[in-house]
Length: 195
Image (cartoon, rainbow, N blue to C red; front, side, top):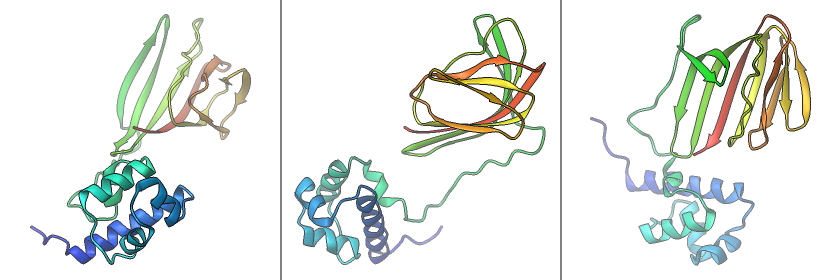
């Protein structure tokens, strides 16, 4: 069993995370002070690791920055981390049925963190009379064409994808393949979204 981090280490890690989050929101310490009710001097001391934050202070800062409380602890070492290593030809094979349409996909990775979900799949579409499904979701979607040719629709725009082509889209707008031009079409898709 490893030793717990010292309070100095915790304060420094929390301060570093706070500073990164504040800057990612394009806020000065003074602006964050006005939003959170925590003095700019205290925010500065916290960010430099020169003070320990109470739970009330952390809660006020998390609400002002609109981030989960756990975001402040992301740089503190943990006893575990997850990884997925899928060998060639392996993965979890699934079949999706949508009305008359069906296609197979292989799940290659799924990672769920406190504020992010990431999923990667290899998908094979077979040309058939029924159309593949359209999707509306959250986050972003990346598609990389591996074999064959198909038409991808994003909103009202159509894109012909050939091997080596890729497209990335905001998932909030309707998207998906509308036609498989060759007998089969295989692609890699990656979706990431805030939980």
